[in-house]
Image (cartoon, rainbow, N blue to C red):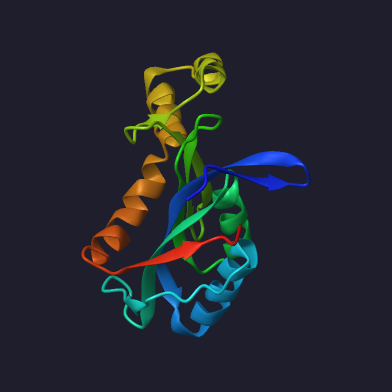
Amino acid sequence: MSNARTESSRVVPMTRGVVFMHCCPSAIAPHVEWALAGVLDRPARLQWAGQPVAPAHLRAEAAWTGPVGTAARLSAALRAWPMLVFEVTEDGTSVSDGERLAYVPGRGFHRSLVSTNGDLLVGEERLRGLLSRARSADEYRHGLSELLGTAWDAELEPYRQGGDGAPVTLLHQVV
């Protein structure tokens, strides 16, 4: 895999990540594949399996490669179906931090920067903003929980466990 590609005479760093489609109604599965294919410029055929946490729903995982920013584009493409439960990760590069975008119906998106070892990163301006807004220790704890995406993780964890040992599809963007 090349580390960069040329796009209109500029070099775009390449990265990789994973789409975790935690919960998808079976009727929507082909549409999810088409949305992923539209971002990646190639067919995306996922290996769907039942989601034990949500009977009659499916789950799939797909590893992808593409230019930096692909995780955000994949997430934006999937937001067309608000009933989906998913996460999209993107590895960091020499010019970008890693990230994780999580979507839960009724809660919306949570976007986190991720370090090389998998820790969530919270920028100092976000922490300063929290410090200036919090009027009590409880408000500060609640604010930290929001910054870390604790509520999203709590809702996603049962779906994540439903995917233990599931097959992973490899998706590569055409370069």
